[in-house]
Length: 468
Ligand code: HEM
Image 1 (cartoon, rainbow, N blue to C red):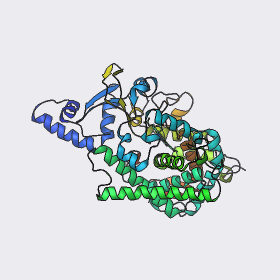
Image 2: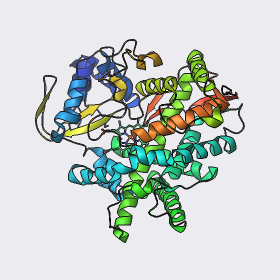
Image 3: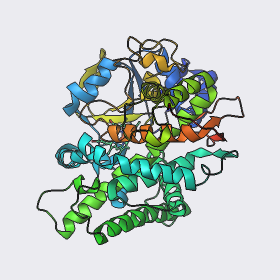
Image 4: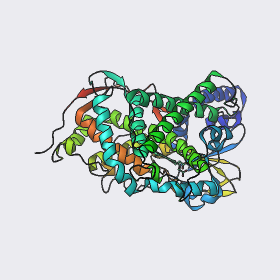
């Protein structure tokens, strides 16, 4: 999202249009908007109209905060809207190749169809046991999980864990802790750089040797090298076409085993890989945070885990086996959806909730804001997992869109839930998250919804015993 809103738009927003007061209000609002864009969107959307118009320096943005209008953009009238906003920028393609996130139109459709098999239930079921195995290995041998008690920023370590799980799922490849952490930091910095380009459209292209650009290119090399070595190991093992991993199913055109086809698949995979670990780790991080702040809910999850016959060693490697844990996850994704906002470009004139949308306008949707809008939720700021029990306001609520909606809905949603429901029971069976500081952790809306300043938690030893 570009957040350099113009004088006119911000004066409009602040309700003062002329004179020195308007200038002062404008400067204050500009500062707030640049520092805390989500807060500003929340203030606009929470109790505001379904569609808010903002005049930006170079274009007009329509912030849509209504389930029917969002459905019209993403589902019913989707052909009138393009994903080709910032993510189609040539600089992004140069570095990341043409993947699902960076394409649109027929090119995207072909890719989506070809990638889908890797994310269907059968493929995921085939790798789930190995994911559970890797999770146990990481939790017993990597920092900070193996030596509980210290206060640590768990976020980068959870990204490292999800990197390890993604490599295991896609290549049946195990990485060590140092490599996983190096890739995790490269991904985190890489996303920051992508956001830099989005926020500052005139940022010099990446070949210009600025320190940030040089760092980014090195980070992309780190990520690509990790993927290459995982793929090489897979080829050496002779697993190329086996169904042991998801790469066999990913974007594989039948009969096309040329060098170019292999390069295409690799490119497509890099963008998917850029999306996967941080998003999933963000959900893990906010879940641990919310459980640390709500001991009664944590106790209810632990009771559910303790009731499992045979204990943690017998936890199944499947999603959907712990209903209370699933409710906690759903509620976490409501309060802290991994993608705080995304946008579309109008290809034709349209009308949304009575507001005319001209061709060429930018349309923005924010899961974060609509999940916290009082029109659609009871006490939206409160953490209430029971709202996802039958009859609760979370069940079948069209204002619940953590994975988006329509044909461009997250392709990795089931994969993410599988990882979350494999990791959390195993982690909580060994460790109890505790927050020493009572101050709430603020959100940092990068491309993903990160915790501002990291997520310091104490991981206390605990032991969940199963029912005999
Ligand atoms: C909790 C974790 C996740 C959340 C909250 C999330 C959220 C989202 C959202 C909201 C979108 C739609 C954006 C739009 O309509 O413009 C999306 C798209 C996408 N996600 Fe996820 N995601 C998660 C995990 C994953 C994982 C694990 C993967 C890959 C393994 C993944 C891969 C993608 C891809 C490739 C797209 C683009 C799909 C397309 O355009 O066809 N995501 N995600």
